[in-house]
Length: 254
Image (cartoon, rainbow, N blue to C red; front, top):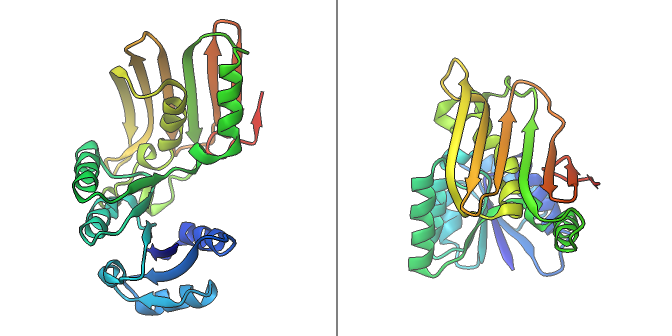
């Protein structure tokens, strides 16, 4: 598969490196608003084509999938552009800046019959199966509650505090706790209660979310940019509990 990269940033470098080590995929093209930057990225990762605009990439007839790695404030507009050109999309988290944008993108994907997905890597790691298998085997009994958190001292990073870039802890690190919870409890949420503390620029510096599910199960998610947390995902059952350490890149399950 010939893959095009839209936005040659740090995360895109990791993706390009990974694709170059895959047998059934090729880093075929890269696009930036700065052609020289695109060319430098293409040379570094041995990519055949470099474009100085994102639309050029979307119009390339040979590109079979586009990976979007720009700030999440721009995910909606570029996913929409790619889908309009009939290009399947794998978009970095957070998928969009809000629910209305996500709904529109998913409806457009269905209308066009073109794939769109979020690049949330934790769903595809070996740890995911380890956790699912342990729960399915009844090792902790019937699951009734989940907690998950992720926090770093990253308040100095401009894109996290800039509302124009859809900044805030929730859309940056908060995606991981919510995704962890969803992988355990699903999406049949009956009610949501939340609170946050905002930065001077108006985005959330830290937040806490309580989810109540239709089947009576509950979860609490916390994320922040003010300091480090233990970064645990804990699944509580009728017989015990399971701890997944470092939830955005689980390295130990106990």
